[in-house]
Amino acid sequence: MATSRPNIIVFFTDQQRADTTGAHGNPLGLTPNFDRMAHEGTHVYNSFTCQPVCGPARSCLQTGMFANQTGVWRNGRRPHENLKMLGTYFGEAGYQTGYIGKWHLMPHEYHGAVPAEGRGGYDYWLAANLLEFVSGPYDTHLWDKDDQEVKLPGYRVDAQTDAAIRYIDDKAEDEDPFFLFLSYLEPHHQNHSDDYPAPDGYEKAYTQAPLPPDLAKLGGTAPQHWPGYCGMIKRCDEALGRIMDTLKSLNIDDNTIILFTSDHGCHFKTRNAEYKRSCHEASIRVPTAIRGPGFQGGGQLSQLCSLVDLPATLLDAAGIDVPDTMMGRSIKQLVAQRDMDWPDDVYVQISESHTGRCVRTARYKYSVKCPALDEDGKPLDAESADEYVDDFLYDLQSDPWELTNLIGMEPFKEVVADMRARMVRRMQACGEPEPKFIDAPETFAFQRQPEFYGGSTLA
Image 1 (cartoon, rainbow, N blue to C red):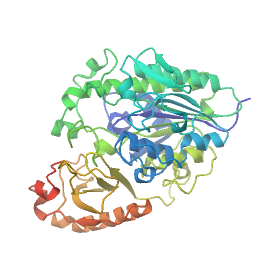
Image 2: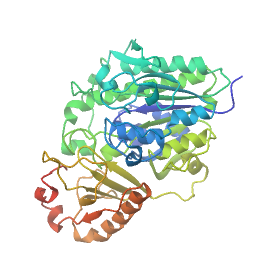
Image 3: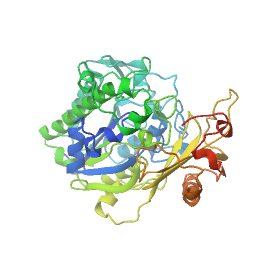
Image 4: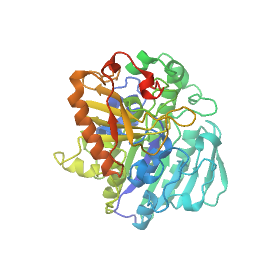
């Protein structure tokens, strides 16, 4: 007889903007299944990553800690050996644990197979460390727990979904519940070709699709890549529907929690030279919804929630004690008690394009970056910095698409002071030293001075 403890599935996409969903107002009909989850369950409307880069974000989601604490503050690093991940937490609590898809928590010399000690405590394993480098849209290669390469048929989203359905079907009648982490590459770009390969025929359906206002204004690669990106998201949502159908057909949908979220968004080379790694909404705001026991009928949450809140939420939903090492709080408690004390800001660490930090409240966003350069004259890429210079301030109430940078403007000095204080509290909470802040020159809002930022003109 199946257990009364809930099964849990994490449906994790890669590089998906929140505004691709109907629940966030997108008119294209890309996500009817996500929208249904958001309507019937709990829609975490203001959901943000804590690090807009693949590996660091994954380390945060697996541990409930910030990237500076996990050791994975940039891609290509491995989490500190003493850190527990979700696979271990759930396994120790008697759950059957499985991981399918992209891992990206090992050094980059590991492209496909991941050694057993690097798998985060998951028992069932069908994954690749760098899925974007070892597979194509119709050429899916994963590795099992015996390090054997497995080639799966079909479009990559479907291949992974088929594997997940087989896993769910196998575990549905077991006495112990299962925890399945299903990690897709889509709608991330295909690295070697720098494109967004949708299933055959899907891209054409969105060739005339309107661009979000930020992309329409700023351009970047969006005119070229938006149709394929939309097609990939459409197929991901169809996969979500297949998972939900599977649960219903096995009569376990009422006792299974599904969490849908993404690691970061995508700004299509409008804010810097690539696709993410910035403080902007396009990079940090992600779609998040939860359905199942404890979340049905939860409605839309207005509070700001972070990726680091999700591990605590999952453990709490399973009745597992949340360790003090986790930096986030359980959204399940927020659903039950809407007026509970909840942080009114979220904190984001930025790496690789530059060393930066960001704090966002309901109205304002403030971001800083380290002005130092490395030996090649590029912005310093480091775990943290002792000195930061003002970079961005946005009033999201009047400028939701972040087209007007207010940093350096006299009327907003008090806002900057408040946001800095928030940032320092956040830094200290996760073990970062209090830095020195350098004011932006008052002319910065009207005339950028690249030399003030060490030669960097990232915008």
